[in-house]
Structure formats: C-alpha cells, structure tokens
Amino acid sequence: MADNQKKIEWIKWDDKYKIGYKRIDDQHKELVNIINDLYDCIDYSDSEDDKLKESFKNVLKKTVDYVAYHFTYEEKIMHAIQYRKLLEHSSSHREFTQTIYNYVLSYENGSLDAIHNLVKYLKEWLLNHVLVADKEFVMEVIEVLKTLSEQ
Figure 1 (cartoon, one colour):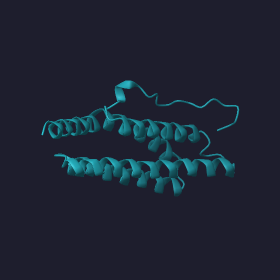
Figure 2: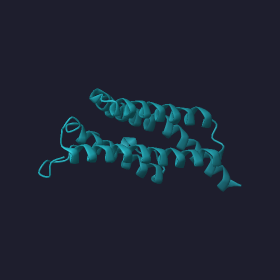
Figure 3: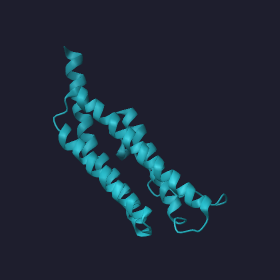
Figure 4: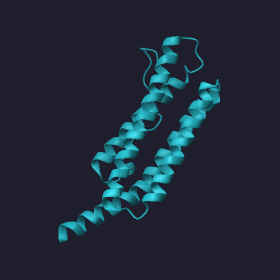
C-alpha cells in the first residue's frame, strides 16, 4: 500500500459480530484487521515491485498463522467444556485451513485470481462462521459456566 493512500476497510467490524466472549471477540476483530490488510495488498499483488510482493506474502503468512492460533484457542475451550459439536466445529476449521492452503498454493503457482478468490472466501467464511457457529459455541460455554457456578 502506498504511504499516502488511505487504508481500505473492506470488512467493517460491527457489534452484531460480537459473540459475547471478549477474548474470542478480540481475536475475531484482529482477523478482520488482517483480512483488511490482505485486501489492501491485492491491488498490488500483480505488481513487479519486489517490496510490495514481499509485503503481500508477509500479510498472507500473518493471516495463516493467526487463523491457526485462533482455531487452537477455540478448540481448547471446546475440549474443556466437552462441546457437543466439537467434531463438527473443528472439522469446519480443518476444511477452512485446507481451502486456504489450496488458494495459497494456487497463488504461489502464479494464479492471481486465486488471491482475489481467497480474500472473498475469507470474508464470507469469517462472517458466516462468527455469526452462526461461534455464537452457538459461546452460548454453550456460557451455559456450562452458569451450571458450574450453581454447583
């Protein structure tokens, strides 16, 4: 991104995305920021400027690393509370991770379309996953904590 260019907020965080568990909400906000950073880079993904390409690869790596960290964090909680949909939820995490890997591989093999499709996929998946699966998961966390506090 050029120094004088304003950062684009492709995904704007909204309170409707909050799931009620501050640490996970904070992680989701960070994922939104990272996806926005990746989106900022896609205009330059076909540039011959090595500095821009390097910046893009760094944001892509940050995306992959942070997603792995976030999934691990969620799944530790799921195991701790013996979440009833643990297998289904962690399966969706694995499918997501594989899809990301496939897009990255395509990009590394020269497909610029792959990276545009990746950014779209990240946005759709994150917002749908947060609004449905993660909200359901956190509702169960709250129920378990309530039950434990009543004992």
